[in-house]
Length: 406
Image (tube, one colour):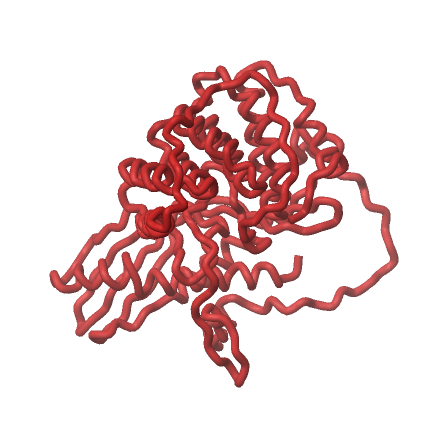
């Protein structure tokens, strides 16, 4: 895991040295820190991210309007501390997140992860079970129960200890973090593991499926594009550049750069428009053949929001994205039709294996010609089937976007 150093943090001296006074200034600074931390966590520089989150926590503390934001920041810093084996401090941060927002389910998730890292499995189970009680409707609880089962198994082996005396005590002192080697398996470089919108409800399970394509073993998510898909997505092959005589380039003096980054040490390129178009086109190709006959497929993508940036730090590129959208779908079987929709509130690169799909909310059935079709919709769209195909398309989209010309 890359370690922190003074040079690594020097490019963030503008935000670390900032002294915002008004609420608007504080909110602006915190938003800038969260944006930067997306790229920092992507590059696995967890200590640097923890230092920036500490600054954001100091700025937010005492502002009633920022209590929910403070819960997010404590939750995120808990993650960075777990990743650097500061597990006791990770527990404190998770408790602080819950203290600032008792309905914030990710605070309980962080608490469970931190307790488990401390081998306090009974307390971890209690944290996960408390989190399940505030889990928003429509969010899958599969991963929660999976972690509870793991903790129960480990607790039964006699390795669990109690942490019932642990409590959160706010401190006005600045926190100094030290770099340690993480024993946790880090996520792939494209994963965005950050802020309120992150989904860290995953575990580092190995991919459990392979297949053979053209005589070679490849991953479960390998997909050969059909001619129809190639026509819809378009030609993404790199193109040769024609070199002409150089012309002077006028320095960009626009105000697109962040107010907290006047030194120009942090650059990012907005790729939102092209990335959204590509993802939308690929989602429209998702379909699932029903075992009973008929087909379920995506018909339209609506309410598409979010961003996709390519961040450059010291000449290294990082792909950072976060989207939300609504998928409209239908089932056609024996001349009968069922129409509905479901929302993907946060697609940000944190679900990257076969079993851990992105959560969906607002699953709705708008029209149906037969009651049996509603049952099929819940089974093969809400839980499995088409939902799996959509997940594969998202993973495939990232690989295509990653390799497309910049």
